[in-house]
Every structure is written in structure tokens, then in C-alpha cells.
Length: 464
Image 1 (cartoon, rainbow, N blue to C red):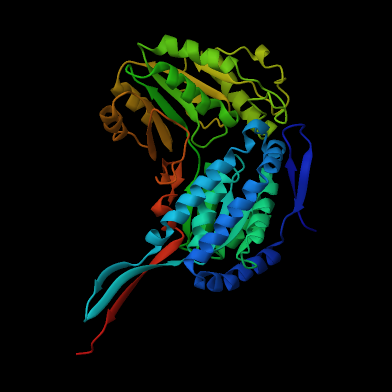
Image 2 (image 1 turned 30 degrees about the vertical axis):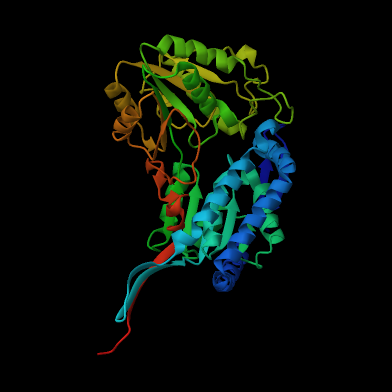
């Protein structure tokens, strides 16, 4: 009997949909079909592959209002924001399509009357994408688009919290005219997923999720020499220097901490403020958060929906409770957010002060609407605090000096340095991280490198 994967909607805590997990033997058949379909797809002209991929994005845009409601029901994002995800999908797809010809072109070393020497790039074969629920279209597209454009076939396993997203992506690529089996959406349990990886089923595996999930993927791939891309989250800091634009810093950093109920890989989870601005920053931050409206994500006035599951909300509740017991001071009155009764996925936002790095809330990934704020006396103190983390995805520096941002950024253990912005992926810049954030790179021209392999040609035109 097949195992049923249930999607529990955080809106009411009830089953939204259930799907049968693919048994191992059927999953192997899907992999074989993907391998068989890939060479013919790779042989098609690059322009055609690009056209089909962009057509799929256009199809998604055509029903984005429907998809926004589905996202609200699946993972709790307020419907007023749901359609916005597709602006990012279009931006990333268009950028990767636009640089594909250059990124995939052979690098010619010599083309003389004696030799032709060059380095080509060819698809790795089947790319396996294990996508997360928090930005379920955006994160999947990061790898799916360059993989398909480069001539690979793709197998997508979406998170159980967003099962419907995988189905919608399959519909989009089918509507765009991709050949059968070039793109497949599958529902798999963990054991089948790990078995397929261990059997060297894929040329590249991209996983976005927890550190524990990334560890399991690495263990499954051990000895197979399969390429891996692992984005495993963050504990991203913001630093507000004495020369910062205070109002802009508050608005952007608090949005970065609270948007999507804090469920962003590059969300702001800890903030360090120069002591000269600390009191004013905290006062303005509290006022900003108190304007949020926690409620049913299907209602237009809601600006903060439930977390994706009660389990995730309880994790954050535990971090807050531990911090308060250890001396932290909560500044947001939960009574202002009556939807949080402590028993559901609805969680009131929180700002904590008097925090330190011994507290879980300042060290462990929260992935929820909570942020700790600390005062610092210098850039040196701020750099030490920002680097005091097991993660390294992004950091957000607030200063009117580009030179200072570059100098501080050079000292930070992170994948991306922002100045005067946060929580944004520029598709022209690679998305990467250090330490427990994982390994690999997506987006930019480097996004094509992981889904292709180099091949050298050394062709002698004469035999004498």
C-alpha cells in the first residue's frame, strides 16, 4: 500500500490535500524516463529551450491570483502578497534566459590552422530538485530554469507543505510544450528520495531546507560523486551604523524580519545597532511591528499570516520563552494579536532586547516572526557579533558609505553583503552561503555551472 503524504493547511489546521507517495520501483521508472528523454531535449536549439521555459512562466503568471490563494491555504502567506512571488519568478527566469547563450558558449583557447582547442559545457543529464515550501515557486525556479535551458531533464520533489505547487509547475511546463518526461513532478517519501540519490540516479541534486535535511542528502550521496547544491538556511544579521538612515533601516529590517511570518532563508533574525541610535531604533521598530495584522491569510487586511505549521510556531514559542526566562525583555504585547491563542500556527510577532549570544533565539535559526536587537559600540564589535554564528547566508549593512560597507563586508563570513537593503535575490549575483548555510551556487552565470559539466576539446587539424 502506498504511503499518503498529507498537506495540513495552517489556516484551519485541517488536511488540504493528500497524495500517494511514489513507490520505489515506480520512482525508478520515472528516473529512467527522464534519462531517456534528456538527449533529444538537449539536441534542440537553445532558443527553443528558452522559449518553452519562458512560456511556462507566462502560463503561471496567467493564473497567479489562483496560485496566490492556493499558497495562502498551503503555507499561510497572506493573499495580498501571494501574487508578488511571480514577479520574482519572471525576473529570475528572464535573466537566466538572457545570459544563457554566453554562459553556455564554448570557451575557445585556440582556433588556428593547426589546432582547435576549447572548453565546452554539456548538461549533466537528470537534475533532481528538492524544493522548500516558504517561497515554493521562486526557490524551485532558481534551479529548474537553468537546468532545462542547459538541456537537462528535471525531476522535482516539492515539500509536503506545498504539494500543489509541484503539480502546478508540471502543468505549466506541459502547457509550454516540453516533451514528455523532460519535466516530472513526483511525490516521494524520505527513504525513497535517499535511495534514488544513493543509486546515482541524478547528475546533480539541489536541496533547499534544513541542516538536518542537507546532512541526510550528503550521506545518501556519499561515494556517488553526485554534484550537490545545498541551501540550508541562515541566521542573517543586520547592522545599523551611526551614519545610517534610521527610518529606512527600521522599515527594511523589520520587514525583512517579519515578512512571510519570518519564514525566509535570508530573513533578518538578529539586529545590531550602534549605541547612539539604539534607543530610537528600538522605539521605531516596536511601533512598526505593532501595526501588523495577524489573521486569516485569505482576508485582504491581513499582513501577517500563520506560520506554515503549528510545529514551526511552537519552535519559535520555545525560543522566545527560553530567552525571556534567561533575562530577555519582550517588547510586543501579544494581546495586540488575539489570533495567537498559543495552540495554533498563528504566532504573534515579537521583538526581544537584553538578549545575548548564549540564548537559542540568537543562535538557532528561528524561521519565524521574532528578532533580537543588541547595541554595539563599534564596527569591530558588530563584525564579531555577526560572525558569531553557525550560518552565513546574507548580512544587511546600514551606512551612507559604500567604502565602509565594502570594508566591513570583507570581514564577514557570509554569502551576500547588502548595503541599505535586505531580503532580496538579485539574479545577476550568485546565491550562495558558508558554514551551515550549505554549499554551491545558484543564479548568475554560476547557476549554469552546477547543471553542466566541462568537456575539453583538443583537435589537431594536421597530422605532421
